[in-house]
Image (cartoon, helix red, strand yellow):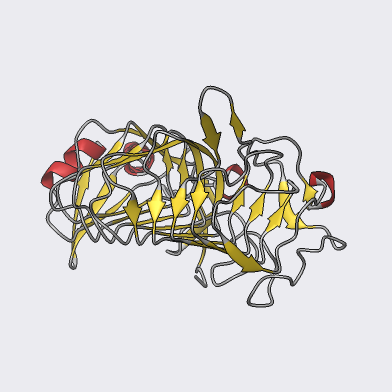
Length: 333
């Protein structure tokens, strides 16, 4: 009986251990700070469900993988949340962060490039010195502000994100970047200065949905606009060109279930059957997050095998056996 109890206590504790994978050799840590400090360039850090304070910067190429952020898909594991800024410096290029909630910002020092953020919920926005290039944001929820300092972000790729963030006229924005199949929820307005859903120059916008009623693209210049859907009549892009854009589309006629200008897990961002954005993307798929090359995955779970169900008995049976029932699903992408 004592051995069985010890096994149960170990199993409960192990669920919160962080695994650092270096080749075929794993190591285990109880804190994210410790895992980062002891990891080597190129390691993968696997975070279980739980909340993990982060107080150190990442100064090496690391791949951070959580279990997801959607409440409906993390019932068995719990959500993975990083409390603090994801701060990238020095040699952090070519790394990635997948399947976590970032409670604060993604902050980057200079010359960080080729970084992937996928299926994350970034609550505090982006604060990045984009002298580096080629960042990719795929199937994320991005909230807060986007504050690019010193130089515009160049050659960045935003695919199939829900962007509930804002950019001010004082920010540097993006240049030579690509925005495809995103939903931009933030309302634009101009008072003493302009605030808009995004700021960009010499970029490509295709198959996006813009909910704003005014000044939607007031901070976008010299860019190509194709097959986007706008609630606003005149999105206000300066020196822009393109075709097959849909304007003056009532917000209530776009999504199956969505209201206001804020993100909610309770909303359904599929297009209504009668929405003109159905099959109207440049590639023939839906405008919005369910079309394009990276259609939104229900549940937003990361691509590694995912625990769908787990049931661990509170104690052992009369033979000292601990009953464990775990269902794991392999991911197709």
